[in-house]
Amino acid sequence: MRIVGLGFLARSIRTIADAHPEAVAFAAGVSSGDGADHAEFTREATLLYDTVECCRRTGRQLLYFSTASAGMYGIQRRAGREDGPVRPASPYGRHKLAMEEVIRNSGADHLILRLAYPVGAAQRPHQFLPSLVGQVRRGRVRIHRGARRDLIDVGHAVTLIGALLRRGVSREVVNVASGWAVPVEDIVAHIERRLAVAADHEVTDVPPQDPVCTDRLRRLVPAAAELGFGPGYYRHVIDAYLAAVPPSGRP
Image 1 (tube, rainbow, N blue to C red):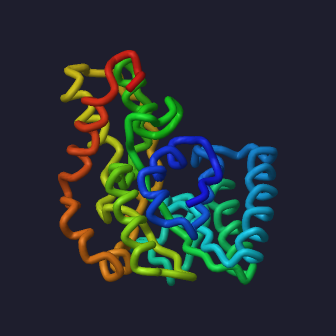
Image 2: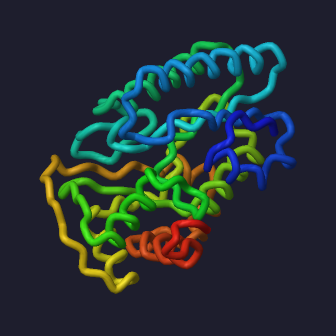
C-alpha cells in the first residue's frame, strides 16, 4: 500500500500496508472537523487530484478518508446512511463531500470511508478526545450540549478497513463507526471519573445530533459484531487512550 500523508491516520494504517500492495491510501487531508482554512482545503484538493489521476492511470484502488460526522450528515433526525441524503453543516463537511464527488467521477477504482472519531495514543492535541482530556486536566472544559460523538478505537477502524480491502469492496461509500453516538457530556463525565477531576463546565446548547448507520459496514464485514461495539464501548476507548497517554500528553 502506498500511503499519502504523515499524520495520525497515515501512521495507523501502516500495519496493513504490506497486505494490500495495490491500494493507495489518501490520509493527507485536513485533520480537524473545525477547520475552515481555505489554504488547507486547497492543499488537500490539489494533492488529491494528482493522486486520483495516478490511480486512474495505474489501475490501483484509491482509499479515501472522508467523515461520518455531523459536518457531513447534518441534523436529519435519522441515522446517517451512505445512500441517503447528506446536509453538510460545516466547511469541512462540504469540502469532504466535494472530494468524494471528484473521486466518484474520476473513473478511478476507489473506496470512500466515512470515518467516525478514531482514537489512539498518537493523536495530535487539537483532535477531539485529546483536546477534551487536556481541558479536563486543566480544570475547565467546553461542552456543546446536544452534540454526540461516535468514538472508535483506531486499531478497530484499521481492522475493519483491512477486512473491506480483503473482501475486494470497490466503488462504495462505507461508514466506519461503532454505530453508537454518545452525548459529549457523558464522554466528559467518564474522563473526569477516570482522572478524578471535577472540571468547571462551560456549556453551550446545540441542536441534537444523530448517529450514523453501520448496516452496510456490518453486512460487508460481519466480524464487526465481534469488536465489542455497544452503548458502553466508548468507555473502553477512553480508558485505553488514558492508559497509553500519561499526563504529559505524550504516548
